[in-house]
Image 1 (cartoon, rainbow, N blue to C red):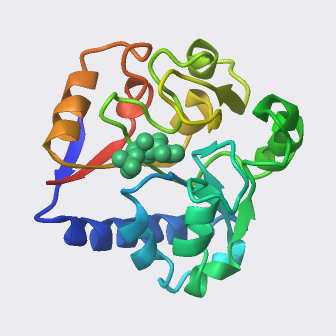
Image 2: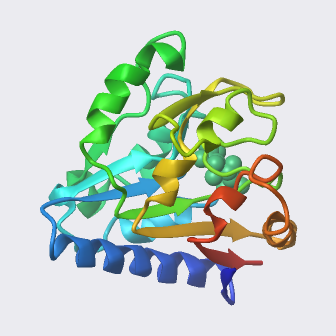
Image 3: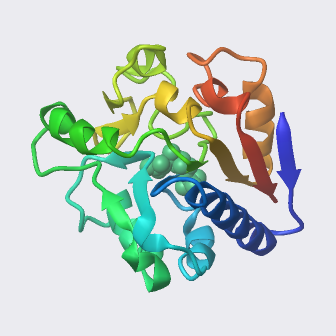
Length: 223
Ligand SMILES: O=C(O)[C@H](O)[C@@H](O)[C@H](O)[C@H](O)COP(=O)(O)O
């Protein structure tokens, strides 16, 4: 496992933002556009605050969430709301947001339309993922109703997900889409998540969904 430990969370946010920017710049040297995948949750905000003002060709970058809560985009728990506020601002406001939500009752209803736009910006150039203490990543949750489908090598691009304890239904990039990223990073903080990611190495993706991407990801950790 490729694990990088940082002196503190601020150093990690600065270094990781610069690393992601460098990878995006490298891709844009030989492609017209680059695709950046980012997570929601509470960890990546500081990274977004650093990344949004890096001098990049943001108008050539497509931004995609790794997963979304099935909520209106102005809802306090919406990941789209989070990245519009913290990432797609400053210089990064010029980036194109590829939606992972549509105002329909269930994610299943929206997947054909969402996949049509998403497919045009794959494969992923740079992906940043988070991880929960239960070893989920994106919305690939242990015991999730569609986890088996989301882990399948022939899975669709997007998979709806529901799991016990989730406040709302979710939609997620499937494991094969995440694994196909040219550059893949996972950012975690705290001792519990460090122990969890170590544990995940010895479990199956069904028990620890993050395992589906561990072999190709760089893990970034601060206490
Ligand atoms: O929708 C989400 O919440 C994220 O995409 C999710 O996969 C997140 O990365 C983990 O749950 C970790 O969340 P924290 O960073 O809040 O611990």
